[in-house]
Image (cartoon, rainbow, N blue to C red; front, side, top):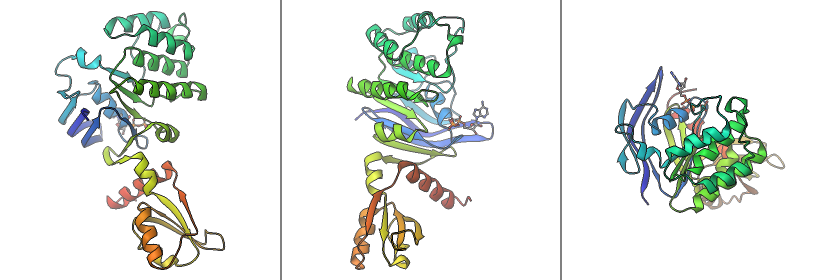
Length: 301
Ligand SMILES: Nc1ncnc2c1ncn2[C@@H]1O[C@H](COP(=O)(O)OP(=O)(O)OP(=O)(O)O)[C@@H](O)[C@H]1O
């Protein structure tokens, strides 16, 4: 697989905040979710990838080329971008006028895709941009980003402000987009349902650093909550144990969470203890534990 985005020791400072150094490669054909708490640097990273912010250090390659040597329209036309703030536009323009303006910039503009999306997302062509609600603006930005037939979609919280109906359509359209061949989606999101449904890989950003890159299916397989009847004193040393709660099982047993379920269970069984129950850990809980572990490692609270 070809890397679509490559960052090496990439650094961007904004006021007191420092993103990086970041080393990351996003491969073609994958949906990669960027997750992290507020202020962790997701938008800073996306804006840097779009050349809207210039790096303070390291290298950034897009489609195998050094990014944005100077106004590289060619590279940008291969990316569909939905940013954290509105694309600058004349707010007095109508939806149709803005679409015509955007369409002129892209040789690859696909009118059939636009027609399908504007109909599904119920975009009103005569509405002025300044009259659009937050959610309608997001719908429009998403439709415009997909309609120029990009190879890479960079979506910074694309569902913020969307109602559940538009959200379902967007999920569906992202999958349709991926059906189109060797395409790639890099999406920043706080919505775990989006990560669950879409992501192949999860990149976890915390305080400007990448704490981990995980295959979603593997992460969900590796992390489990288990209940045992007795032997609470033994679980703390099992592989991957991140939390233990006594008196939480039926009949007052012990509940624990492990990031290495297979080995933890094998060691338990070797001790002659069989788990009473094993359950999947919610993705948000996994990420919370990862963040807490990182805080402890870096000597934080
Ligand atoms: N224009 C700016 N000038 C100075 N600092 C900024 C600017 N924009 C963002 N920052 C700082 O950069 C840090 C990262 O912000 P960023 O918007 O990238 O985070 P985020 O992960 O996208 O957050 P959220 O989840 O809230 O959208 C924050 O500490 C923020 O205060």
